[in-house]
Image (cartoon, rainbow, N blue to C red; front, side, top):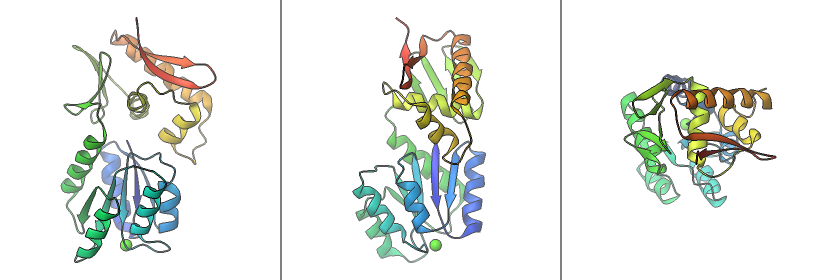
Length: 225
Ligand code: CA
């Protein structure tokens, strides 16, 4: 899961990044409204945590703009004490939740889990399912029946992404953007290497799930006949 944080209080932003990294989320943080809008507009995030009062452009404006672009990424607004009217404006502008500052770490994590669950139809008992496999992204475990194998964080993120895409093929470019980020120097053969790791692990648990190569397009999950 990839989360964007737009928060101009650098210490708070860094604290949130640390908490989320520890909980196996991939996080990008930016500190002003324009950068927030640029990042949010890419549509690659599973969740956006958006402060309201920001330099260059406020959070409500960002929210309205991305909703106008048709981006449906769930948004959690961070509201300072007493910004009651902002809360109302926020929910009216298409925010999915808001969290008053200051907040407890556990509350932030619980709200994030709830929002991500709401957004994903394929989550069952906290696990993602496809064919005969389940993926537990919090303990990075690929499960088929009574067999299971530990994944690395990147393997788990890649498999999760392919599972969420269901029957839609994913290009290597899209996979790199989503899993490694825009600024990464990752090359196409890097994706191939991770795909081959995942294929080995799927074979290890005797899964019927395959990662099919769609020539000229990319990869898509399938189920053996
Ligand atoms: Ca602020």
